[in-house]
Length: 72
Ligand code: FES
Image 1 (cartoon, rainbow, N blue to C red):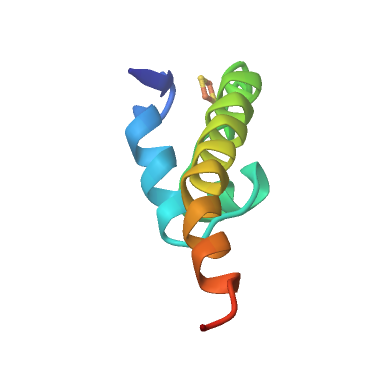
Image 2 (image 1 turned 30 degrees about the vertical axis):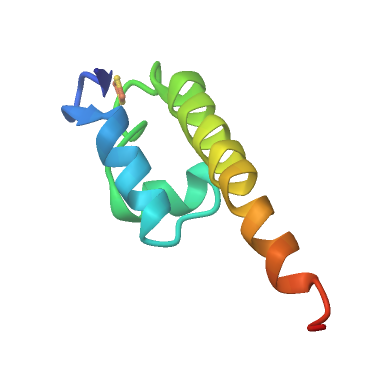
């Protein structure tokens, strides 16, 4: 879906920016022009970033726990 209509930035574009290392909306905005025109998309863009970062953290938690266990 389009998050930023002014610059045709999609939720997928934002998630790709997070995959490349963006950890905040500010970081995403360093890569994409989202929010740089009318600004109406900033709340939605922030939600996409927050939800995707939360998902990434949830998905990576079991792997971290497995690696944290001592070897027998
Ligand atoms: S909708 Fe994103 S800057 Fe206007």
